[in-house]
Image (cartoon, rainbow, N blue to C red):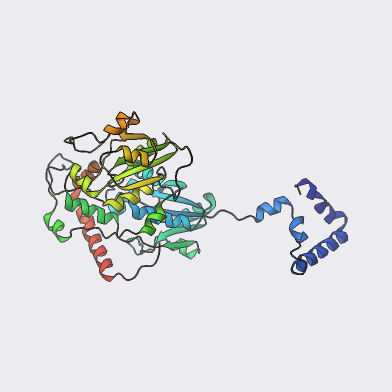
Length: 414
């Protein structure tokens, strides 16, 4: 029944109220008799105008989650994955550099870089820049009215302002707040600690005045910053697209360490994905990275790096522990049509052989111009250049992290 054919219902209400009333009573009785007549469809559902049917359809639930998302890691990605699971559309609020500086100290990544990382996650539908650090009642209503947000999401770790005010107090009071579980084994504090403790060579970096710096040995000796992450097949499945390439798909392959996942990684993966229908990313083993980049690398171990890459919306599949040298067998096994590599690379120049010799011989190799010159080392150098500020900030947080793991009990959640 189309919309125009239902106009007789509204006309009937005006001209023949008793007749229509009788029809509706009869329809209701028929509807109640479905169990006796083998599932006869009740007329009331057929008599509803299409406009009313549309209104009765389930509305999409929009959820909001905010944060600094500095030094983006798989813990951030998993938090946003959990947030998306609580609704249909995920809107992310990104705090700007000035606000982060005022509340937490200098951010490692600038606003543009953090925006690239957050927008590049497969679970994010929309990003609001310059989000406030604390959700005021005014901003909360702005989210509800302008962005049609149904729920505000945050992790189960307490979040208070210096005066003791709950950052999400207004959302809780309004009954529009939901919590997700903390992702075990990772935090930005932990990553900063790894960088501070691993890059001990004073020649590795300089401070803002161009002087060589040496991290505080006392701080470094207090913790080895060994990763607490315990990889599971379930977590990998949660991050995976869980589907292979289609028939006759053009498969593109790119490999690398993808250590300390950053905006440069996102941009080169986006460019690689545009060259085909399915993007496979090869991720070097920890041993391979150390061999070609130095003993203080990688900062993130293999499974941590794999999850960060899997979380990227441009990635379809990853090879965990990919070989340094691309072989004919690898190309055949994954039906690779194009092998690409970015112009910005940190691989050691003393390599004995070209890892891309085979795809070059097959004429399927392409050197891609890297959209950004940011590297893992340059990100680490930013932290080392401001090592005093980060060491001071980390001192308190490191103790809090240590206390958490000492007192930790069974954690149930995603």
